[in-house]
Length: 220
Image 1 (cartoon, one colour):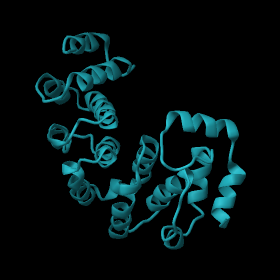
Image 2 (cartoon, rainbow, N blue to C red; image 1 turned 120 degrees about the vertical axis):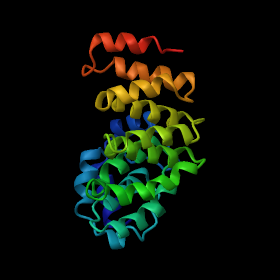
Image 3 (tube, one colour; image 1 turned 180 degrees about the vertical axis):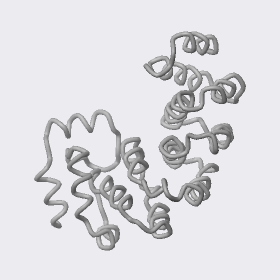
Image 4 (spheres, rainbow, N blue to C red; image 1 turned 30 degrees about the horizontal axis):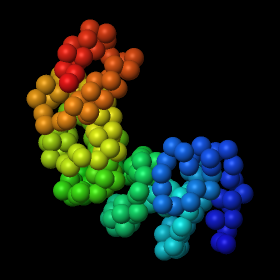
């Protein structure tokens, strides 16, 4: 057992392991380490050596994503992202990985040109990776129409893609209300995504009541 794996087992909590196992299905066994501990541990890891190792536990894969997020060179980061994305098999690792890729903020155009390649994928979590990256870094006036085009084009048959799109559109509505409202009136989304999007927007305290009422008329 290497030193990082040993540290993970030292940080393990049985109740948290049971909780994580219930809410997140993964092919990798869960140790039971909370995210703040993983983020702190990731800051201490040399990515050159860690990313060359084979990892079998859920938290080790999660750490891989966080460690990639600490890389400051965009080209190097993208090379590791390409290798990591196929390892994603659950929403938790996907979403944590996306939130770690803060290098995107200073390299939006180049990163967009990279992530758009996942638009034609049929893999549930490759598509979710694309959608959550859009959610985290691209909801603004410059990219909003591109976001709608991508949503229309991607394969939307899988549950975790549907949920990510609903989440994305709900935040789009908050940040780019007029354009998102027009999109919600005219799109190729199925009933589940439309209704889940409206539900998420309705739960937001940042949207006025009369706007929520208008949106509810779009329910299917």
